[in-house]
Image (cartoon, rainbow, N blue to C red):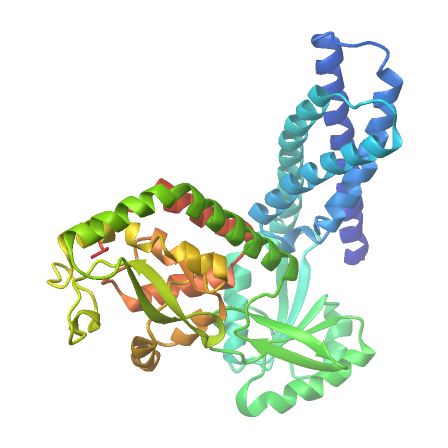
Length: 458
């Protein structure tokens, strides 16, 4: 019964989105042609286009996975998806109208529609999400869970569910709890055949949390999933898990991938396209500044303009990273040894200015254009230091699951220069786990908003 209600909610959401699409379209028409009184005789045309707009939006919303169960998508991702879908729908409508109609669509109407649609969809989706969550919080139409087993993951699962009551999950009982049921205030169930418990409690999910020496029990329980309509969920031992876990089907064999970043070909293509366009544009626009910096470097110290150093990037590949030279040149190579610290005597006067303003990093735009680096990603490190850090810092090598970047989540949060390696790794792994094109855009904006000058840049 609960599944039919949930599908009913999705149908209600579909109808609500259709009404909002139509309302935004016709309200835009009213403002454009009634209030502003520009144009006549468009009523039937725009009525027909309104119907088409509803259908187009349904397709665009579905393409962006906006008709999934409401509780599985964080609110910010839903709103980003809605905003993108509205723009996608308007562009699709314009293209269709261009090819299949001899008349031109009103640009004013279209712009007004975009404004009204964005506002109305956000409001309607917020109200609908709050309505669903209120029902779950009050215990109505809850997702009933029967918990079996007492592995460490089971306790983490319980705590996660308890921290998000608005998701609507409720524990109806716990079998083979190893004495933990009372601690979490979950009814303890007798160790009777699992099918009898399912028949009695009618759970939507049976969550199996065995681990270690008791893993065989989980395998035995899964055989009962053949004779039950309840969904079985197995809590696997995949720790330490820093950047995500995915489960694939390999010719009928379930394969668990641990600490693998999400693979999205299209998003990766957008990221690379952004790197090429923005780095080429940056090199072109900043070339006069580069020339000035090069002249000042030559005037203030002896040696080459550029400094190159071997660094590590995606999948452990090595490359030479370019920077403006900021240190004096010594024949014995001592200027390249050791971590840069505050008031480092190797740094020239002009080099200190370049470092504090991050202007020395700009030649890395060439590395981005070549494909060695990205605009956004974990900062690349020297192989000699990586050998040391990987022994001392857990999960250090996981940062190389993403292409190195000029700026990154750690850098915009102040973790650069002579600061905690552990904190930098924490922020780098958070970035990799939550990566998206929008996250990259946010980091680029924060890089400019917070400025290039940093107190930790020596």
